[in-house]
Structure formats: structure tokens, C-alpha cells
Amino acid sequence: MDDIDAAPDEVDEAPGLDAADAADAGRRAALTDSVHDALLELLMSRGVEPGSPLRTQTLAYRLGVSATPVREALARLEGTGLVVRSARRGYRAAPLLSERELDQLVDVRVLVEPGIAAHACARAAADADGAFVARLRAAVKAQRAAPTGPGYPVFKEYLRADWAFHELLAEGTANPFMVRTLDAVRGFVQRLHQVEEQVPDAAESVAEHEAVVAAVAAGDPAAAAEAMRRHLERVRSRAAPGPGAPGPGAPGAPAQVAAR
Image 1 (cartoon, one colour):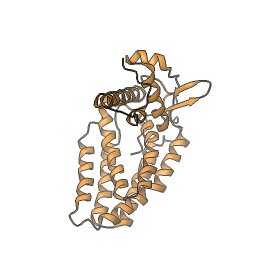
Image 2 (image 1 turned 90 degrees about the vertical axis):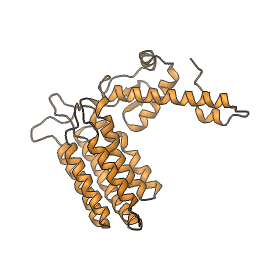
Image 3 (image 1 turned 180 degrees about the horizontal axis):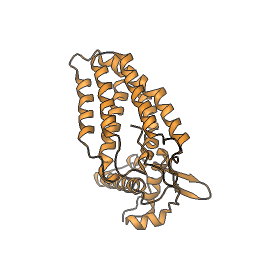
Image 4 (image 1 turned 180 degrees about the vertical axis):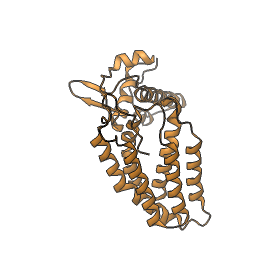
């Protein structure tokens, strides 16, 4: 197996880099990406239970790779919140979000995303050919068509389409700080799917996204912000356990609903 201890950016900056070196760097980066995706699927499919230790050598043997791409992939996953690391205990799969944490996550999105929708709408008003609204409609169409289960390997395409809609709105602001702020919560949103076999609220989410698109198409930033706020508050309501029900992750708890 290739030596993959050098980071790709270090290889790119090396003097005398030739085509073979560049190709080798590309292969190493692709291997790390592949290991990242495999570990993500393992975590999301509960192949590793929340809170369980993630031993680098064990995972490397399981995936048939060296330890280096596993370490690099775990470091990336730590940034999403799906993996946690401590000095003495190493890496562990993150525990499920508590009900309080879920509520706090939606609080952050309610503070940020209505503003994103309003700013994107205001900029779209200057889009004479309607290209941005067309892209939003295409994103919702892709979300509606994506499979919702059973299991993460099937519904991960739905999650990508769902998040792509929110990303597109952020990109529509032309403000890189809004894009990065939204991206910072993506991994935490994804953690809500760790107990799901199906996406339970796809129809509701699609309809709520369509309401945001309608407001953007009408050129009404206030209505776009309000449609996004309603969407997120309904997500909060759907995600919350009913009276007397166990909280997320507790024995007998219902599947969490994703903060879409």
C-alpha cells in the first residue's frame, strides 16, 4: 500500500512535483475520502453504537487500509460532531443528541437561516432570468424524488438533496461567512438520523421548502424569512418527543426526526 503519511497539500508544494507525484497525491486524497465515507456510513447505520470507542487499528483492519487514512478521516469526522476525541480515551462515536441539545441546535438555525433566506431573496430580485429560483426548484425536485429508506445507505441521497437546498440559499447570499456558518452545523444535523430507518417527515419538509421557494420567487424577503422560520419550528415540533415519551437515545425512544 502507498505511503500516505504526507498530507496532500504538503505533496502539492514539494519542489520538482511531476505528473506521477501529482497522481499519487490524488490517489492518497481519494483513499482518505473513501475511508471517510465508509466510516460515516458505519456511524450512521449504527455499525458502531453511539458512545463506543473507535480504535484506529481495528477500523483499519475492518476497512482493509492502513491506519493513516483512518486517522485522517476520524479527524474530519470530529469536526462534524459525529466523532469525539479525548486525550486519554482516544476517539469515540459521539452520543446521540439529547432533547436539550436538539432544541439548542434548532435555536441556532432559527437565528441564522431565516436571515439567509431573506438575503438570498433580496439578491434574487436582481436576477432577471430567474436562474436562482430555477435552481431552488430543481433542488426541491431532487429532494422529492430521492429515496427515504430503508436505512442510511438508501436515504443518504435524500439527506444530500435536502441539505443542498439549504446550501443553495446560503450561496445565494453571496456572503461566504453565511455559507461557512451554515456548514458548521451540518454534521450536528446529520447526527439526528442515527436512529432512523426511514425519513419520517419527507413530505412535510418538501412542502415547507416549496413555501420558501414561493416567497423567493415572489421577491418577498420577509415572507422568505418567515417561511424558513416556520419550517424550522415545525422541525422542532416533529423532533420533540411527546408528553411522557423517553427523550432521544433513551430506551424505547421514537426515532428522531431530522432537522431539515
